[in-house]
Image (cartoon, rainbow, N blue to C red; front, side, top):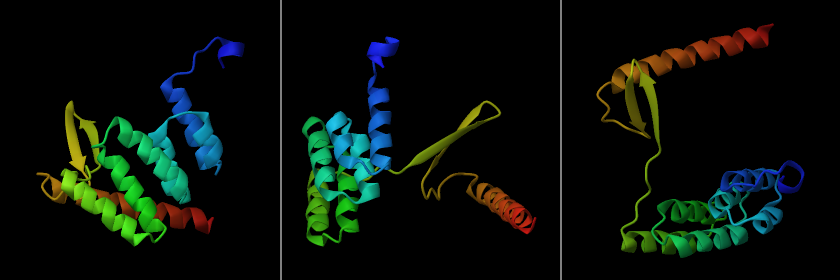
Length: 151
């Protein structure tokens, strides 16, 4: 990229390459490519690679010992591999450190107003209306699928 096009790769470029290698199952090549540890850790969860996942988490936690996402991903990797003692140890460590999983969130702008939603949010003031509309959209998508498969 740099030699042929004069483009200096950014952290985002490297992250994309690591993600592509890892998605293709080339976990070790991804590990050798760069130190984009968060992307690699997520890929290790997808592919169940405990060894590389541990190294990725270790490198993240060297820089940021309170990174709850790294702890949670590693915990999920252990759980997928049925390493329950490691799951318990890591959860206990998180509790000791006062770390909690940060819930996922989404947002949408409607009529110049930004609406924020958290995963499993039961406190949003328009929760019932939102879920009613989502259910209607879901039913419409199911109908579309049925129509397409009948053709």
